Image (cartoon, rainbow, N blue to C red; front, side):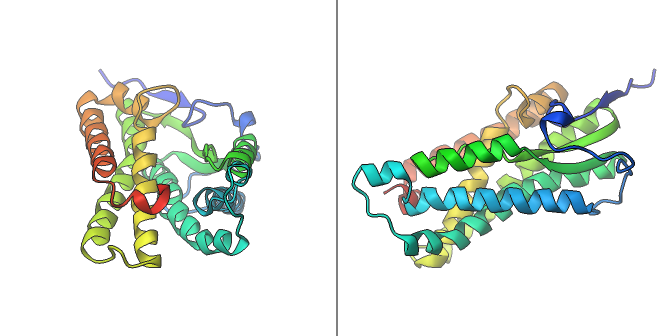
Length: 246
């Protein structure tokens, strides 16, 4: 008996109205790697906002740090901006594109849509506290997706983050350890990718982990175990994390 196909309106099970609109006539399935002008605009805005937010965090220029006696430095803020930008591009951007390309591979309409309220909230929290609660948006898809297709689409994002984290971790420890700017950059890319993978693999709500668990418990267990063990090892070792939290 053929597997029954299910119709999805959003990868994160949120109404498109909670994101930005999807124009009529735009739901044409493109080849893997194709983008609409609206989608590119949403990606650029989301990356820009997250870059500004993370720059507040790692330059320690938030109002909370100021009230705690930390010196506010505009130079430090702009010095961390390219690090934040490259970290966001290699983590958030590649994560979302991995979802998108796999969905397109299965013949689904798939585009990123920013979440304006989430971006605004991220900016406000970063400015006042120095913390980043990243809710930039999501890849949305429409079409008839089988269960295994949905599971593989969900797995694509965290898998890309774990691969990038492993590669940059090796580069950090064997090539760029204690090398100033480049060491900080490679370390941040590793850290933000691993945090993003671990968070998204939690089996709750609209996260990737829940969709993976519904599809294949073994695949979810393997990815989640790798990300948790890797992240725990970084906190126990402490060398990489000291660049950002000391």
